Image 1 (spheres, rainbow, N blue to C red):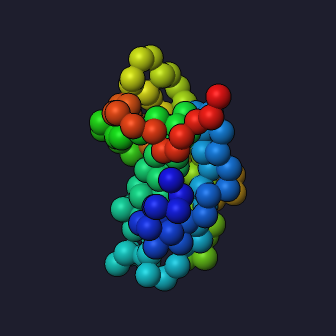
Image 2 (image 1 turned 90 degrees about the vertical axis):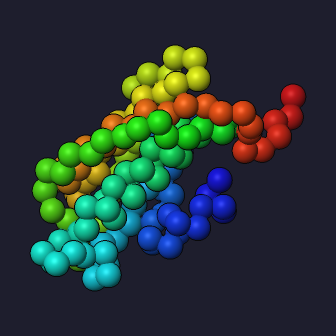
Image 3 (image 1 turned 30 degrees about the vertical axis):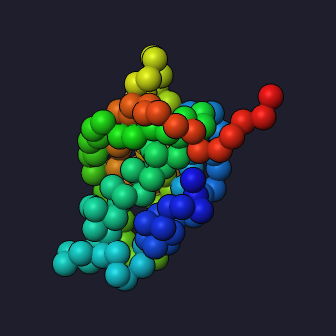
Length: 129
């Protein structure tokens, strides 16, 4: 999935870790990621959290898409900051899932994201028995 994800790579994101129901991504806030206040644009932070969510909910080799998500911003990110987004599965009943993503700079919580997912037909790769 990472090879096909041109958007995450375009933002400058790096896939750090992935496992069943979890994923960690990071990116360094560049000047072109900043808004008129001189802080990381909320859409950039959202994109990082959304990508971590996407990798976590697709980690079971089932095509999975977002149903809806929300984000709360707690502190600003600034140019040069390394944002780390850690996605963890909350629940996965049937074809639906719920995931939380914490975006941090060091120990500082920058944003909290919650995403709901839905499995759709298809896999990312063929599984061998």
